[in-house]
Image (tube, rainbow, N blue to C red):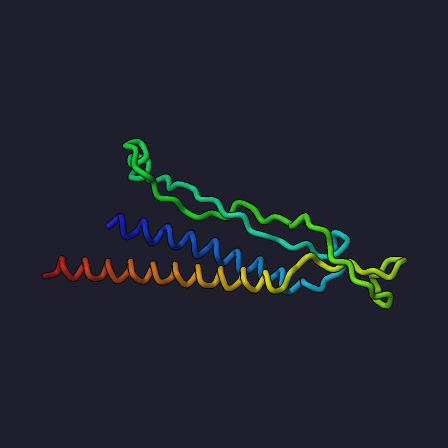
Length: 147
């Protein structure tokens, strides 16, 4: 039964990581036109950094000692700001324009963010499907035990 729970645990960690990625991507889209932030300057695009971390239960430690590949969880290790330069647009009537009439807009590419959002959504759905398959297998295993 622990193998079933391990698969649920791994998929749950991926769900959590992809939810964070969707939140950050949504924030990027929402701030695509934000020219002023509390830190000063335009909004900076953010990106999520994932890391595969081995599980630390007894079975995984034993498997790694025996030379087998341990299970890995997905973990968000950082949310980083894109160091790219802001997009400069000529708009002398904008309140945030400089003396040349240029406005610094965020370095957010709406199309790229939409692709990231679709990718995160599909990965999230795939992990929900994996959880549902694991639950179905657990149910079938319990039915076999009853007969």
